[in-house]
Length: 509
Image 1: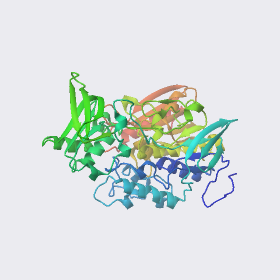
Image 2 (image 1 turned 180 degrees about the vertical axis):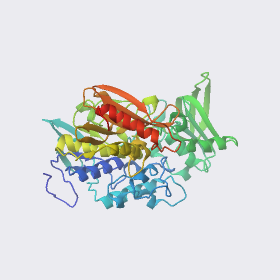
Image 3 (image 1 turned 90 degrees about the vertical axis):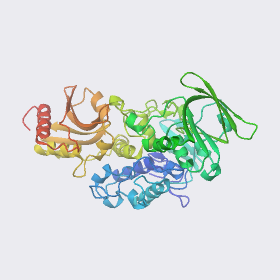
Image 4 (image 1 turned 60 degrees about the vertical axis):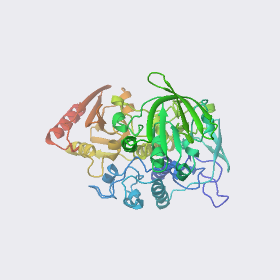
């Protein structure tokens, strides 16, 4: 039972069965999905409205993920989700494909403002309630209940979900970086007009800044010890997108842009009022000193987990991501979960070195839907009714899923090798267990017989359809016949799926 309201804001301080912290796309998607399942919860946010990090960033550039206004699928259909990487996902047609409504048509990459508008519209139309302007300040745990201290008062809940993004500016100590603004603190673009600018870093935010300043700055230098990696090389949105790099490759031909592989030894103020940056080249260790009017630290962000480490939440890496189970629960503190871009802390299979897309909206929106079902079942006793499939319907449903027709398959298309469609054989037919993380399906060798279907990208980025058969604790992997346009509904593949089903069922299907 939620507390009685004491003001005009929803969710006043008090006791709730589940508390979500954050109102970015991860928090909004999870809250929507929990409401659909009937799982009572509260949502609080330090922001003044929906959007999370997209209320601030990117400063100059458009998103790196695209929404295609004209696609071979109706914008209100589930199938359109393959072509729309920025909208949140919904069961109601009127809530689908919202992002394209706010795009001006000049690009299929939405701007920061357009992204915020799309998320705000989804929250308003879906009726998602959030207590805004309520800042999380501290956390305690006692007797199986967590206490979340906020600027508005204390919240108590046995289950917490943090959807706070990887949005806290980070910079390494020393080298004089404390003298210069971080990406999150820099001035407006026109303040750099006619100046020489030195950017520490060569990942997404560094190239975004440089692209924004390209028409204004006199000279731009980007420096870090390692070479820039493009998404083409890494098969991942973690790397720098090639469209950020191209303007610098073109501009460098005429001079004025320099990309340097070098370690920063020190940054000091110069007598002329600018900065002096001493570097050491990665190859040969040759020292080089640069003079610049402005220096910007594009050194990345970390996860703002406040005092959760004091409760035992373990983290890893420069970004301080929490270590998580495949269902996005803290691996060290039960009943603390994560949503949104933080869910990239659950690595999944990482097959061929290709990570999940959980760091971006088009990936973690599906994580949130699966997480909502998991939370509803585990903590509320709400279990979604499973559909029964019979005979050839099973093979057809799986091939439709892999091909992405009939409103199926966007989940496993965007979260390839991470999420899968699972079916289980029974005496009366096949139970559709829906979308699940693939890793626990493969790891739980003692579980009952089942089949998981997913899409996978190999080490050169080629997509293929894979079936995993779990029978008597053993896992067998089968790949379907490939197709250049990803239409796996061939006669040969249908027979291959039926053969796999027959093997599991132990009788003709």
